[in-house]
Length: 310
Ligand SMILES: C[S@@+](CC[C@H](N)C(=O)[O-])C[C@H]1O[C@@H](n2cnc3c(N)ncnc32)[C@H](O)[C@@H]1O
Ligand code: SF4
Ligand code: SF4
Image (cartoon, rainbow, N blue to C red; front, side, top):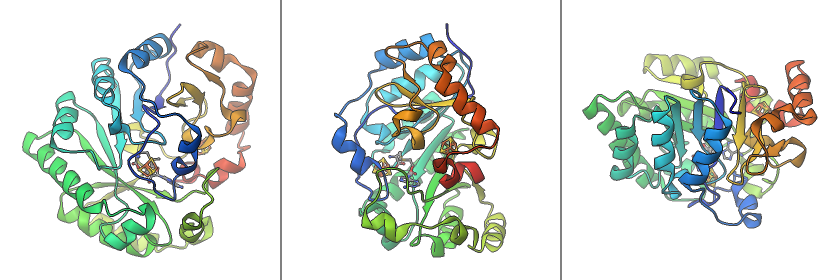
């Protein structure tokens, strides 16, 4: 029987068109075969497992728009009256895909754009994709305005040693282009991301908290920029809302609470190809994990995670 949950993050595929050295994708992709989940597979699992409405976020350790079936998944969930977000690095967010997403009434398009400064973007993503990403985002924003659409762009910006001194420039860029929502993500170490770029770019909590947040938030307010976590407009909560309320489902249909724990088999609680959601949520490890989390007994990964404290 299907169950009611608040939020489900789904990874629609396993491949990316960037190799950002801060991202676990770089290591994980060596072990995972390339695959796109088909709409048929998605529909079968989601219809049998989850009672709508819920919030669904299409995002994982991959580039969502590389899977052509992701559009049908968005349409299906909008038809089921769910709130739908889709995260992308923006490279494939061309005029046609933007138009399709807006036609379907997607609620949020989350685009990674850490900085409008080419040298900062390149330091984080090891790519010169910024020009194309900006062009795509600006076209999407124009189209949203032209249609008077309720869809929102949220800019995801990872806060790293390179980007932290330039957050003001990001606000100015967004303000100049009529984009009002930015979600900062403190860079996380995460399992498997151990390269020199991550070591160079990493910011610990003390340094992160030491950034001139009050001044930055005042600037943001003056410029009409809403600083948030990427899903807060949809979810309406702060802090980690996942254990007991939401899931992360990988392209293999493995179920964990969030992407950050999905690399550790201790926190993969089951698989929706082979098991029902009731079986998974009823199992002892899952129940124990939720109990410990609710009691404030957080895993080391959670203490490192920006979700817990944002
Ligand atoms: C994994 S990506 C998936 C969606 C899409 N490929 C993209 O880049 O937007 C989701 C978000 O995670 C962020 N991210 C990647 N590695 C990270 C890390 N080590 N710490 C914090 N956020 C990270 C990305 O910058 C992106 O905004
Ligand atoms: S952050 Fe996104 S774009 Fe970059 S490698 Fe990871 S999944 Fe790909
Ligand atoms: S706080 Fe823990 S459970 Fe929540 S998103 Fe972060 S790592 Fe996952």
